[in-house]
Amino acid sequence: KVKITEFDPDNFKIKATAYGEEFMLGKHPQGAEIKAITYSAMQILDRPEVERPEIFVIVDI
Image (cartoon, rainbow, N blue to C red; front, side):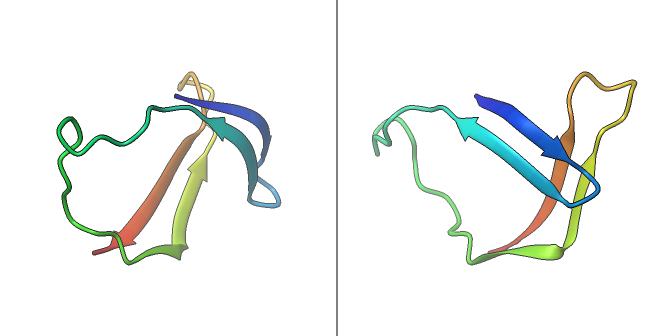
């Protein structure tokens, strides 16, 4: 769960709190390791027809 507390699309800023559970190998199997996020292709969309802002990123694995 992610709770967005501030959203500024003009300055590309988001302040949020993320909630989750502790990692347990038996419950959360490991997959591919993410090396980096490509920020140059990041998109932050706040469209009226969508309930909340959407964030799109490209990850390098």
